[in-house]
Image (cartoon, rainbow over all chains, first blue to last red; front, side, top):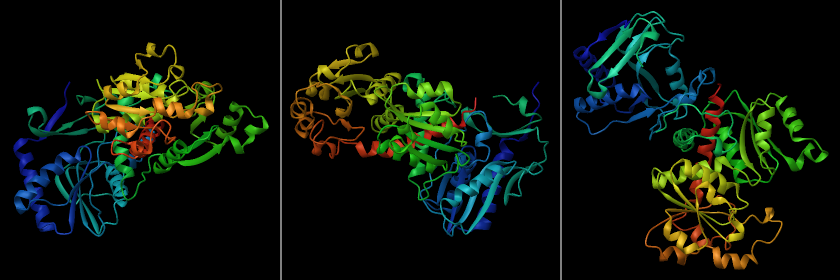
Length: 186
Length: 311
């Protein structure tokens, strides 16, 4: 039995990203002394979209943009039965005194963001760090971490699962909510 | 990319025990660690709760430093032990030595030992994870993995690539591990050296044998040149080092005569002027120092994957 529900369909998905981009420009202006960092692996789908749209909106050739893998900084690495496999990091700049925008797809327990903040320390001391997410599961936090820019906030039980689909293999962009993690198709 | 997301083995004793997926997994993971060791802060906290003991019952410079750096870059606590300054001299057995170290809550053992099979013996008697850093003339798995990683960086997928291993094949654990590793990755392997230094039944491992160095160089995409291991040779296998260098040493003129560029590799330490001349070892064909750099990344990957595998 499939218990999933579409909570963000293709049109609203595009609208949400568009709104996020405008909010970011309102806040960061022309991104001077700022950098954008997508969290590997799934946050990069969102950061790629946002980055591409920001370039169009600001009419600039490039902004400082990196992709950060936080696998080696996770606190649950040795609690799992199998090792977590890393993705590539591409950060060819230092974040010293910069205004950093972290981007991830779903903010859930907050542990990924905690690991990202630890990883970020290895690239210098940022002036400020802010967080943008597509989905904020606001009642499931394990740590005192909040997002500054939110695509959509949802209230779901702990056993629920949020799946963001990025139009892979000709599918539509959409966000699905499964009532139970176990119902999620692999 | 690799299909599996964990190793099929609890220890890294030899390449012989690994599957192709295991090897690919280690090499792919090493690529991300290579990025880590080129950062301004070359360290990640993954193994901060682990203690690793490096037990070296045989001399080593490169491998010991490389393992120690890999462990430190992963934030593990490290203890070093060398047989020359220990109770081994007072007659303690290997198992007693290791059990005493493990009683101090050590989680992983990296061991080099002159006796082939020593790490395999330990694996049957202790519960800690073991990485073989070279056992006698048997295997040296992390060297083969870093060699494969370095070749893959330059040649791409090794399927169908032609790799020559030259020199003292008989006494070389690097040769055996390399043969297992390259064959599993689908490469063609040729060994070349004086007949006395090539094991009699080596072709049963699926490699071809050649005794003409120039013909071998013309054939291959990469030449992995091995050192003459005089310390393991209890009888004379060739008349003199000078004669060996004359017939089996590689010089720049040989490379210049080739109509293509081949990779020159060497696991170190180099005996300059014997198996290879200085102008070859330092030439633009040589990736010898890249091998050393990649060694740290590959060993980080092996430690990371073994430590995380709790099945």
